[in-house]
Image (cartoon, rainbow, N blue to C red):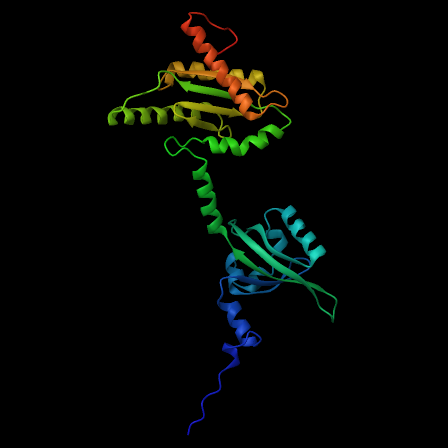
Length: 294
């Protein structure tokens, strides 16, 4: 009678060297060992792939620390390792030799060679670049108006803390399309959407890329100028009025304001809105306020 073959511990025990080697060779997670100076002593194929090199020989000419995009982040991680001896899911960006940037989660621990006293870091990198891109795309969609591509109110809420904590004031220009388009027919609604899209493109051309155009809703828009004092905001408002005479797709009214010390963002926006409303009242009465928009 044939004796049954004994099961190999390589497939049954993580303590078996063969099992550990197979794991590191086949998993997509990137295992590595570096010296205290950041020199990569050993790594698995997934680690080489993340860093964009083919062999360990190619990798030895680089220091892992030199590949980290933000040296301050590396210092933060080393500080945690020095205090706790381990770090988990520490997010960093790595710049590969070909210039590509990868976002990874680093988990590692400190170990000391008893024979030599040398310090080494044993760790694993998980590449989350694609996931971060998807998250960024979803985040961008959540703060964009789907019709015009402008930012929306949610974006304004996100930047409020930054605007309110800044040392320099910011300014805003409140814009309202005159004679709002109102009709229940499909054709008129489509014409209204087209006008809003054209208006958003007109406004985007009048400001710098870093100055957001926000659609507050309906036919109301807001330009945020940061930083900007009263003179700078008024200059942009006047420039808008001149450009409107030539290329604006539809007539509009505007009002502007600059944040006062201690004022909330919403209060600053409201003052710009009230300035616009007061202009309309004066125009209907046949008068004009020289300090407001024309």
